[in-house]
Image 1: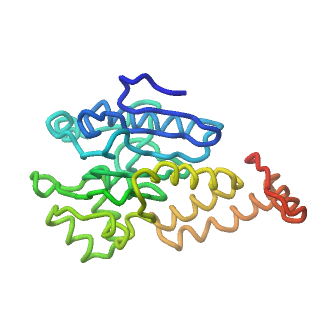
Image 2 (image 1 turned 180 degrees about the horizontal axis):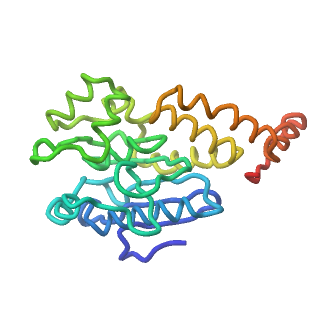
Image 3 (image 1 turned 90 degrees about the vertical axis):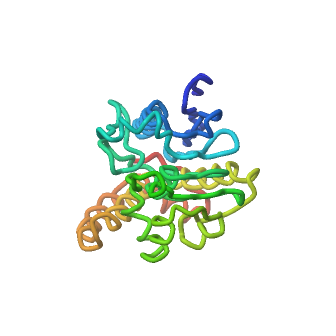
Length: 263
């Protein structure tokens, strides 16, 4: 399921994986309005797919993204960008539904501004050792409006977040690892294979269990532990009576991997 080369975003359904590639290589994958819209639609296709269980988001070429193409997209953002019909909001702060399945982001080269915020809205982040990060909106007379002001301090602590948000300075892959922005750093040639390997491991797990775990953890992060705790008992009841749970018990007794169907 590959998109034409003229597309700003490639899509590939590979078994239970949905690979989404930023593909505006000539502009270092900088986001113009078309790229914003196509990424939203790709997320929507992933969410709607009955086969896809985990998404891997990456950048074609040498860079993940150089951030926003302000000359192209500034006016649209100032008026309030909305996810197109059929799309999802990859950042979770604009208009549009959120993706309810796991998203892994793999970055290399430049990962600037809205690219960082895409990672902050995702579930697992990997990066190449050559990655350069910067949240430089303050240097352009604007501010990080894609979620960094909401999420970065939750990962890195207040002082660390303000250090980078208020200066717009660059930082490297090892600082991103220290901040908790990424979970693994590796050579660039190992990046996408490692992301796919990790996604495949998640996709082999019981889909209902993965979805419930993700939903509960996200709710705790966004709404607090008290709210999330109220949903634990109903989730346990639902999953313990599922076919996947029965298969999980059989697989454990028979000492074999489970074969889960999401029911």
